[in-house]
Image (cartoon, rainbow over all chains, first blue to last red; front, side, top):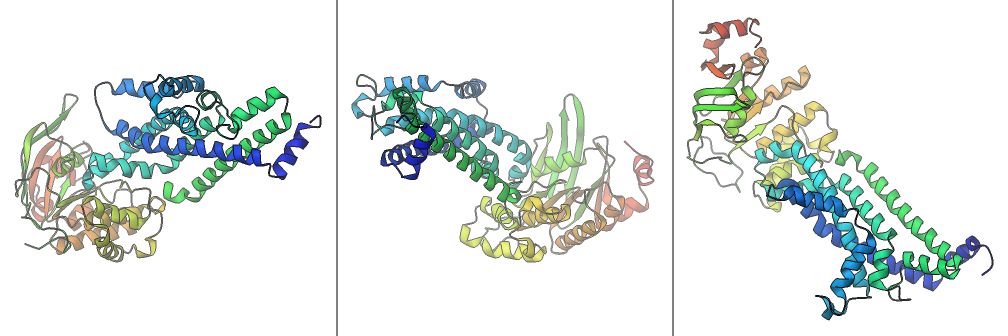
Amino acid sequence: MASNPFVTAFELIASGNPELIQIMGLSLRVTLSAVLIGCLIGLPLGAVLALTRFPGRAGVIVLFNALMGLPPVVAGLLIYLLLSRSGPMGDYALLFTPAAMIMAQGILILPIVVSLTRSVVEDLWIEYEEQLRSLGTSRIRSVPTLLWDGRISLLTGVLAGFGRASAEVGAVLIVGGNIAGHTRTMTTAITLETSRGNLGMAVALGTILLLITLTLNGAAYGITQWSGGGGR
Amino acid sequence: MVRRGWPMMDTRASILPLRLDRLGFSAGGADLLSDISLTVRSGRRLLVIGPNGAGKSLLLRLCHGLIQPNSGRVIWADGSVRPRSQAMVFQRPVLLRRSVRANLEYALSVSGMARVQRKAPTDAALRRFGLAPLARRAARLLSGGEQQRLAIARAWLLQPEIMFLDEPCSALDPGATRLIEETIAGFATEGMTLMMTTHDLGQARRLADDIVFLHKGRLVEHGPAADFFDAPKTREAGAFLAGDLLW
């Protein structure tokens, strides 16, 4: 392993190293699940927050904005306390499983999706309100309408959420435990392999992580351009 | 009474005539409309004219139910607060970020029509308003005239008894304006009641059965268009027709 880490990394990727593939698969599964859950909750929640007025609304908005900066280790700690043997959800034995990691990353993604959705939907509502009310659209019915019409802007927020979750190491390390073959993700593996001096593997994982992010962003840009007509 | 509505829409008692009873609206301490009483009769083309800031658009929004008056009442003949059988076309139409066809189907969807039933009326609207070749195009990329035509088609699709039009041609070139005017005249022939604002006196002459002349938030004259244009009863109306009344 004394050779150039970049050469080793290339060999690992080119030969389709099974450990590498397994780690990559788990990482994608965890992060994509977290993004999906974050969107299922965050998109409607953000839209409802944009269209309703209730006491304490400003506080909720500030809270979600602040949570966008929640340190991943703190999110991990919260989920750890929740899932540990003595915690409220201890009986489900979820700690150190991919499910726990999905929960932790979901917590990181949710505020980003909620805040961005609220801001996008609020802007659209200013433009659409009169027209939608004229057509007889109820407020609840306006939620899916505005989410769909804001789809291009919302995609950016979803990508930001994906970026945050796929890049973080603190939360998945605490609740997942970095168990080989079970809860080891690309970021926790990079941390471990680097500290072990196993730089080839670390560089290989880092390269793949960058490529995935690049591919997703490229695809999103492509979608924005392609649907430019419908989205405008 | 002309029977309106697609076969699958339930048809209710007529909502017309529409009566406005001492309607008033103020904002920020200023009276924008005061003491407006008038009756909008079924089957007529009522044009609302007046200088900028007279309250024309506001009056339409109050009638349509988008804004609540501070005083007075909007009274529909069927007794409902905001009947469904009405539609409005705005000066700058807001089209959804979807295809032309999807914009039309959306209006039907909101009105409660099941998905399978939407195709026939949508096709009819596309044909009638010359939008069939544009059906799959993104609505937001249409020209101004095409966008307004789509907005009118969308309003027509709701089969309203009364359609409110707020300066529908103000941003259009003469060709598009003529097309919209012909469309509006066609609606009237079919028995639809129209209430429309315009700042274009020529357009008012071409389209109006009746005229409402507003000035500084008050109703100054209301009567048959021919009488109004031939012999305005008030000094303000005379000055407005001569182009001397600016605000």
